[in-house]
Length: 252
Image (cartoon, helix red, strand yellow):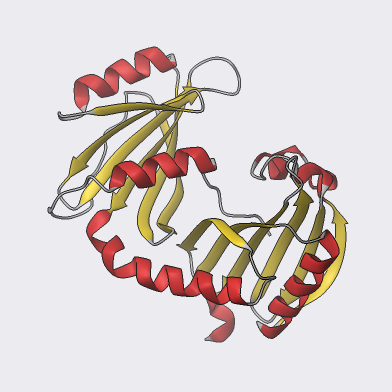
């Protein structure tokens, strides 16, 4: 099972904060890409802390500066600019939606890697209450004082995925046992454990700092799978990253 592809937490925070600037409008807007750019879907139906999003990634042969200049010329004004973790984020409101374009240098060192996010601000007002309720149900079953850092959900080809990041000050063993009970109540049993470092560089890239030294727990049930990563952070708090995938076809 692979976790849903997601943006770094700092960038998600930037997208969510700027999305609050959206104004009334119409259907999901389309965003043109530079000539020759190769695009791919990250999530057609996603929700980040109750904010509905559509995400597409793209790779362009032009440099980040050239790519940014192309978007400045082609995106309607007014256009906001912000830098998050060294990445350039361009954003503007379009009706009920807020569009952001995140640009960064490609991993190969040549060209640009980009992410286009379209957020439905109007729908967020009705969905955030449900998202908070779902998160609170999880928090109520974890040790007291556990904090929710981020919550992401996505639906793709009849598969529902959720990706939660939580922190607390309890031991790894206490968190392991509470997660085991939580997921058992949801119909999943612990199958095996492994060191997070054994997951490989691609999986580790989506984990928070310090997760490489933690443990991974694998759970499975009817039509459901989950991976939990428990690790100790530099400030001595414990981070819990929980990725759950439900295959809706199993319930047909």
